[in-house]
Image (cartoon, rainbow, N blue to C red):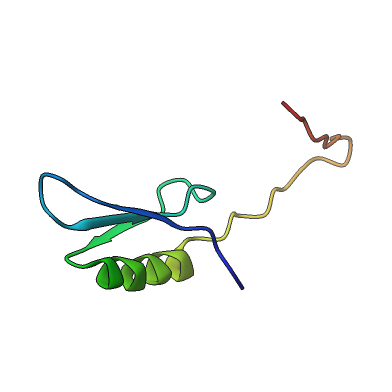
Length: 66
């Protein structure tokens, strides 16, 4: 599976930051670009699955487009 990952050098630490925009809080870093990419792969694998919603039978689920 392919994932979109953003990464950039940190000017203050000279390390690399990496994050997956579609997964809030899924970020990582590394001393090299390659290390940051390896670390973000692990972060994506460990990212928790959302808990299933337990809705009342009368609930109505809708999607909203902005």
